[in-house]
Image (cartoon, rainbow, N blue to C red; front, top):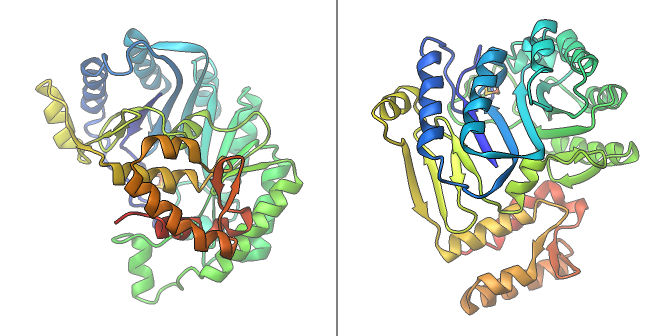
Length: 374
Ligand code: SF4
């Protein structure tokens, strides 16, 4: 699978610490550089049929449809697409106007991941989103009118402008709109964000963990009652609508990341990442050099990663793979660490898979990190 990072946004959301620029001055140079990177890395993933191509960001929908198509064409020159390839475009509601959607419907893009975040004005204002509540709703309907059925929306819970009643309304609206996939995250206060600044100056209250916990479990129960499967801590899908792209990440498959700050993984022991700086990326690629650094993952790193990712999913961690991959020393550590957690009921073993029971998923990262080798 291939991930393409589009490092531009219209404005900066208050909670965001992703890599992007709000200036489009070097957009053409950036697209050119990405095409050069695609060419230079054409031998990676060789002999593999792509199952997924994912445009993330940043805001991929800030590009014109012609620009998106030109990147797809470039990929097609060097990689082969499976018949049922999933091509996802992350899009912001304010970009999904009729003209854009009409054109996009004529491209191979067959899945949209819409950055809705909330259907409530107060939440969107606090988040400094570029769209309003009415666009949050109308963008979904318009996308469906243009034939995009494979839709996902992002929702953020636990905002200080929200409460359980507002959250219930957000979820009700999502179900009414017949959206088949939801990615939902708690509002977190990342360092050096506007949100952190406002909280430190006392302008707004910090998100409350108990409230987020309540909203998380309400969401899980409500969406399951409405036909969704909770297949990863932050992801829900109706049957047949799991994100193929994300599922492949969670199953430790190989992926290639194009664009500044994009990460790649060889499915085994090498992880690499591109420089998170638009100018440096463009400059390197202009000289036909890759802008990436890489690390060899030690046995311990691979073990920690497998635990971290696997325990967040309904599949859990495959104990037979774990046994095959890791040395006796790591096995001993693992067997020792899981004993007390199984006793506490926060870990279970089912069909040779280690899992966290869903009622403890809100704490999944903490439970997983207790098993790490440091
Ligand atoms: S649109 Fe997405 S990437 Fe851009 S600032 Fe907002 S949250 Fe961050």
